[in-house]
Image (cartoon, rainbow, N blue to C red; front, side, top):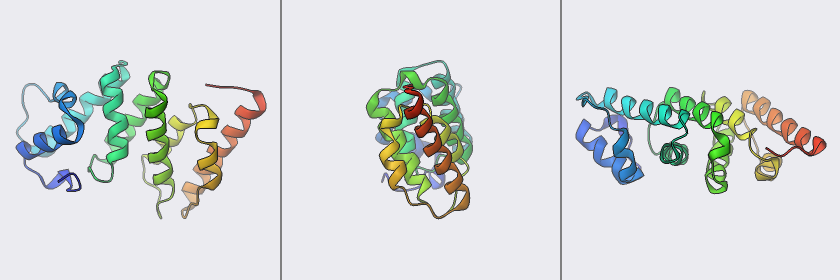
Amino acid sequence: MAAERLQTASRQELEVRLTDLLGLRIRSHFPQPDQRHAGLWVDAVFTRVAQSVKRGDTFALSIACDLSLLDPLVSVGKLNKSNFARSLRKNHRLLMPAQRSRVIDATFRLLALPFCPRELEDYVKLVKKFPNHEYADQAQNCVVMDSKSKRLLDDLLLTAAKQVKSGEVN
């Protein structure tokens, strides 16, 4: 069931699938008053998650990290994914090492795609906030097929090199 795309589900199916995928913690982000239209409802849920991340809500941080891993299993939408990445970047210091690792893995999975998804820029900006030792090996070994992804990877490698040179650790 997890591999099914959310966009074809009814409003009630969405609620069940999101709860199955993300646990009961997602329920606190369900919109009030309720929204019957499935697409608008799921967008409202993800908007509420992004707003909670911006406020530093650690449960919302974990949901956003999990959603970055679940995609493309969960059709979240490129704007929602970008909003998650931007929100996480504002509170990157609150992320636990395991959460940073999940975001890094998702970012390098996106870099390896034959095209450059819109949200990739925001995820690369987020990863650049992390200590370079957490992503440098993956960056060195990443093979990209898209020119924009190549530019983003080069930027990530340059940031890691600058951190090493200056002795900076985020």
